[in-house]
Length: 318
Ligand code: SAM
Ligand code: SF4
Image 1: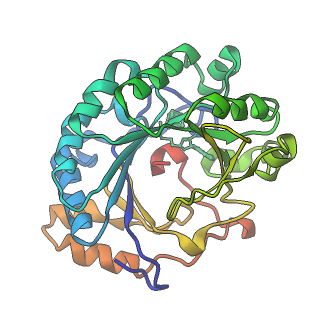
Image 2: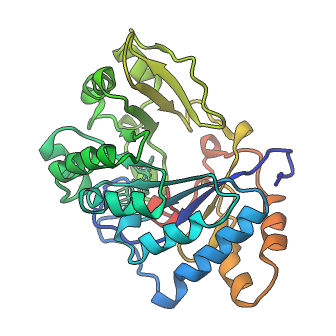
Image 3: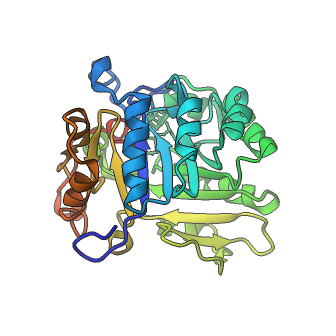
């Protein structure tokens, strides 16, 4: 499937819930978000039907996200269903890792290929503070279990936040020395609540290369990945820099998102949404509607000009 600019769209990020067992400060407002009525959330069957439509149009990669996807009942059944669609070659999940220790084996058995785990601090207290209550040891156990059952390659996602974890960069990078793990730093995006945050929290990923100058560009190319990869000499893992602000990757964007209430977002940073749930429930052609939406996908985000999405990340499906 191509958009109006000739970009091939083959990657769907599927949010299956806007609920979460954590409340990260940069993702969710302290008072929480307005609860979506149960009937407005896509059912497992609807999610599956939508994925099938995308698969028919050439989507080969699906990432399940949220909210916290492991907090949604029926996630294992959904994975089994999605795996049955021939075209889907890569099925991954982004999680905070809290429930992975207990769920990793079942997820693997259901057909999940791999996980990305979000972890913004290696310090107990700071982790609890940023997640408003999470326990670092639960995530570490989850990472260990994911590795053990083969939900690999594991990627750790670290949102770089000035005044919070900028002094932990070296520690995160060193994790890649002995472990075949990718640590990816993501620039903080001014989405929802974060748009009001003070400037000093927003750091360019160039900061990583300044703090760890021995990082060298990695030769291993990952098709359509927004990350630029680096490595410490002789390291088993890699360091990825995802820089949506300082070095935007819109020109090679291959992705589309679906919110848990069935709104198709052709761009994370745009407020334009297409109501796939309504199309599905009214028995209109999903494939026609998706193709129509793709023709409206903007060429690039305009964050630098102040054009921001009004939703919080937890509502979009990061
Ligand atoms: N709960 C899961 C998790 O935390 O991995 C999946 C959903 S979460 C919204 C997906 C990713 O979005 C996480 O890696 C999180 O750190 C990232 N994220 C949330 N808000 C962000 C922001 N304002 N800027 C950059 N990344 C953000
Ligand atoms: Fe929950 Fe993930 Fe958002 Fe944190 S980043 S509040 S874990 S959805």
